[in-house]
Amino acid sequence: MRSRDLFGGLGKLARRSVVGFALGATVLGAGALQAAEKINIAALTFVSSSPLFIAKEKGYFEAEGLDAELTFFRSAQPVAVAIASGDADFGVTAFTGGFFNLAGKGALKVIGAQLHEDAAYDGSAILASNAAYEAGLTSVDKLGGHSFALSQVGSSFHYMIGNVAEKAGIDIETMELKPLQSVPNMIGALKSGQVDSMIIVPHIAKPLANAGAAHIIGWVKDYVPYQVGGLFTSSRNVEERRDVVEKFVRAYQKGVADYRAALLATDADGKLIESDTTNEILEIVHKYVYADDPVEKAYPKIRNGAMFITEEGKLDVEDVKAQVKWYQERGYVAADTDPDAFIDTSFIAPLGQ
Image (cartoon, rainbow, N blue to C red; front, top):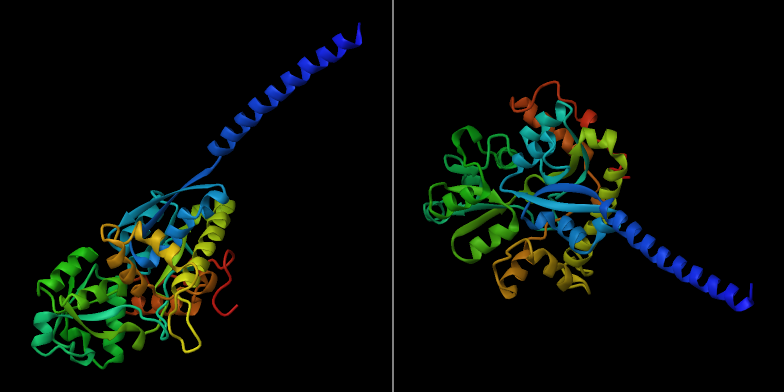
């Protein structure tokens, strides 16, 4: 065989190899995309869910090989039910008596933190309706004898008003607690004067007050600084898909870090400041919160509604245990519910460590 034929043959072979490699790479690439683990995350369209929005929009879930879909609910309890039933894989929302009952039966695992009421940051506000305010409900110590809106009995709103009343020296038995099933229903009832008071997150409370639709008469943080909510998943995921949980946690923590840097940064005097990433994060959150409002209206609302989230999403374990005890003492959580059995700190070290 002549050398030209030999090299010509090798050239053809090389070309075939290159084509084959390219096709193989394409197939492998498609396979990698198909291999992305699908997860569904249950949450509320609150500023408190921002780390999830950030993780999705900035590609943190995707970088971990997760195909994340967000499903939104109108109150906290259905989020817990969605995880327990297997309709969603992860949830981020406030703790409730119903949540603790589900967790106590082995359905849920708390693996990290959501919001934390902290004295240094604005948190949930205590509101009075215009009619009630004009009739004399101008401060928290005057809540006795008035009606109060909550989503469900045993909800986080129930826990907050119970503790606020106790610290303010109010007999909660004199108050009429009205479960209205959802946050929009609570807001509507307060604005129309059907209820006298409620507690709500700042990105809702402040606009209501600024618009003259209600009055802020106090802040939960001044009465009960506590671990408002958590990051959780099903017990099955922890047992059978631990690698997926680890990936989710890493992406969530990156979202928390971005949220803290952009919306919780303070100067030497403790005043909130604009960081280099604030506008970027506001743009992301705006896709989910106040999405129908123009930027000039939405951004200030989001900025004012950025509640405190602990570094790395670390959970205040002892406070969660105190919450369980409070619900148990009032008959909203089964007496045999053991928080040590459903709090799993193996993914994120607890607060203080």
